[in-house]
Image: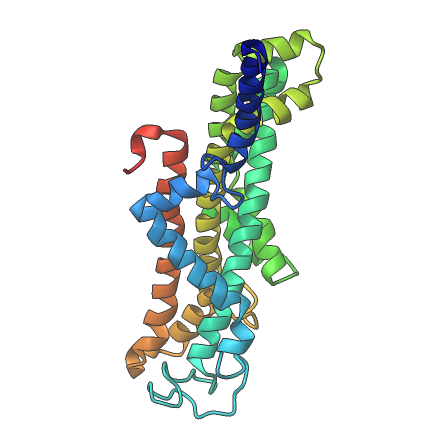
Length: 312
């Protein structure tokens, strides 16, 4: 065998080795990887506690028919009973199991929080981004409505709309909260888009002839994801508290089982005077925990957009 043939065989073996080596490389990416944004949220200790609390409330709301020991409207029990083995939190003045109402109330609060927070965020997103990007006369008109939404007292407006409406129920509460809670989100998104519309990639999109809606929703909005999510979580927490306040004032549907209506009936029946502290403390504590969980998750959302807030 000549030296030239030996070199050719060596080169062929080396080429085969180079081809086969990456197949068994340990640096291949894992097929099941946790998304980066979720990993950042989970690494934040406060946000982790909020996620666990929110997951617990979500599971309770989903499996309420299986977890609740009785029907929340069942009135076959003795009225105003103290906590016991049969009724861990006692019974209402109508003979209903308080624990069952507390479990079913989680479903109502989460539905209102998610839907009202979504609609409020979408309204603020469309108005704020359109005003910030368009500028000129359209910005002046939309900014007027944004300032009007911020100046008008929210609580009296919600009370007025709820009191004079002929329809009562969850739909009305969601509608009232959605049309009264978009102002702050719109103002923040307008300010953010004003700073983003001067970037080079936006200028390139304008010169390429892209329409305004595509530039806003395809080029600018992805860079505002953390801000939008934070706005949604804040709006959802505000919606949960607003629903409880309206229901406590008697402006909701009294037949709907929610933590706000529980507080209303507890107050009307004199639960404090009769010593039924569980009737008052349980719905108030769950409301505080749900709102706290959403607030804690916001710490993780802030860490996504601001690397300096991330924990090692």
